[in-house]
Amino acid sequence: MTLLSIILATAAGGLLSVVIAASLTVAVLGRVVKSLVSLSAGVLLGTALLHMLPEAFGAHADHVHRIGEELHHHPTPTTLFATLLGGLLFFWLLEKAELYRHAHHHEGDGHDHHHHFDAQQAGRGGLAVLLGDGVHNFCDGVIIAAAFLTDPMLGWITTLAVAAHEIPQEAGDYIVLLNAGFTRLRALLFNGLSGLAAVAGGVAGYFLLGRFDVLLPYLLVVASSSFIYVAVADLLPQLQQRLAWRETLAQVTWLVSGLLLVLLVREMLHAH
Image (cartoon, rainbow, N blue to C red):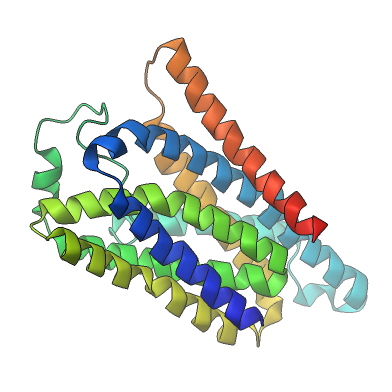
């Protein structure tokens, strides 16, 4: 049952985000991308700081309660925080190698780039976009598997967080592939195939992590570092512009809505 949930969740997070992104026109994307980025930042931060990290430290406390004298075999708070730091640095290096990219730029989104900027960027290699997206999606799949193995409720909340930041990312990748010369159908097909990497990551995570449950607190912390890195290093800087107070209020509203959405989903899952 857990494996089936992981497969369904990773398929939904990977493929539905591709379909939703591809169904939006460039003009619509230019209007809604900032709102999606703000919402995604709230969902990612809420999931990481309000659910994943508390769950990781809760797992540590549970091991302390049950094992006592074998405490030295289980993560201490210092070890978990060191893992968080290592995770942030790892994803920073991975993005520098262009294997963990987060594209949310579109022409007409208000960024100060010259016309056809995206076409020039795409000319550097549409396949590189797919490779980076595939690695990213595989990591997301492992993250979702670790969350489900810890707690099914956490698994679905994590799936929500992944889907929230996948939609603007897949939208950006879709536009880049079109500018690289892909047809709409081919761009959708290849983006969908890269989305299936999330399913592969989820299945691999289920079989590998299921045998080593002592690793789950570490994996939850690494997953948290991934979400925090994407939110703080990529999403929030895109919102750091001088805007009219109404636009600023809209950004804050969308971000807070993301936080509330995470809490709402948790309450709904608890009710069942």
